[in-house]
Amino acid sequence: MTDGSLSTRATELFGTRLPIVQTGMGWVSGAALTAATSSAGGLGILASATMTLAELDEAITKVASRTDHPFGVNLLPNAPDAAERISMIIDRKVPVASFAAAPRPEQVQRLRDAGVTTIVTVGAKRHAEKVAGIGVSAVIAQGGEGGGHTGTIPTSILLPQVVDAVAGTDVVVLGAGGFHDGRGLAAALTVGADGVAMGTRFLLTAESQVPDSVKQIYLATPPTGTVVTTAIDGAPQRVIRTDMIDQLESATLSRFPRAALNALRFRSQTGTSLVDLIRTGLSMKQDQDLTWAQVALAANAPMMTKAAMVDGRPEVGILPTGQVVGSIEDLPTVAELLEQMERDALATLGRNGGLR
Image (tube, rainbow, N blue to C red; front, side):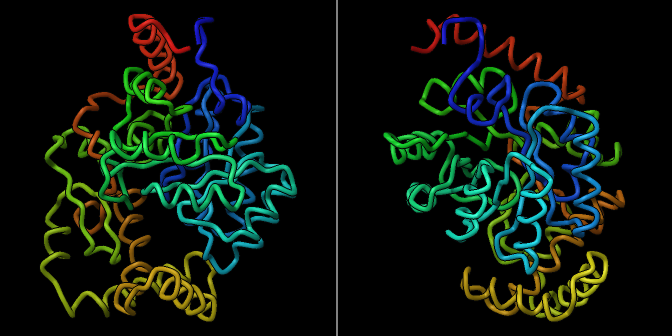
């Protein structure tokens, strides 16, 4: 990489100018943010889990009308209508599909057969080895600093492990968790990654649909202002520490009925049938070894996130974030962000002799 560009295996795979991916954040990664990212040279990804099929179809249309650059759609592999969403991605010729959890081999195969690039987020070396074995195109190695659902291994340890785990294959590796600028991108490339994926940094841009009042809460959060909790849905999730999080962590039996009620509200909002809600719960219970209380909490989480991210009511919601939130101080446009990242990455690599 000595030609003054940031071309990597990631840019070749995705057909982008920069090796930077905007992750599919529920209620955050809408058409405007996704299109802006792709137009600026990165890979924008729509978050479909919080959309109905009709809303996803409309969002894909909006992105395609705003940019002629590649973009993707994020999926939940155990969603009751996952097959229909995959069909839509294929029919609408969306070039990239990403998964927040390990997909089933047949899902990956179907997408690959249709020429769709697949990305899976992993939090451990063994997970990378597993999904590489079923033919995914790329993995996002997300360290414990990452926002939302996250693991316990720091990015500085996890990323080189994953790079080594898939060495000798065609699997592209992206780092996530703690990245927000060009120096971080350069660091990821230096340890062997092909690029970075970011969530919180894109959440805090002008095109993000999060209310400005909520963005100000993020900007005011120090690096010590986040917490990893299992009280939201039974799985470790990094969020801004608020009074609501403290209440959830101190509550016990009272959480279950509240979660179940909100799960039913979310079901009606997304058009999910009660049968499908139960089927999804059974799948989650089996795949992730959750208790029924944890399943109810997991179904409740989207409503709590929506309260903050869409309705602008952080006092009754949750604020997923990466620990890097404490290093972010502004709300640039996506184009400004990526331009600055490109300049800083090239400058950093230049000082260190570039990559060979």
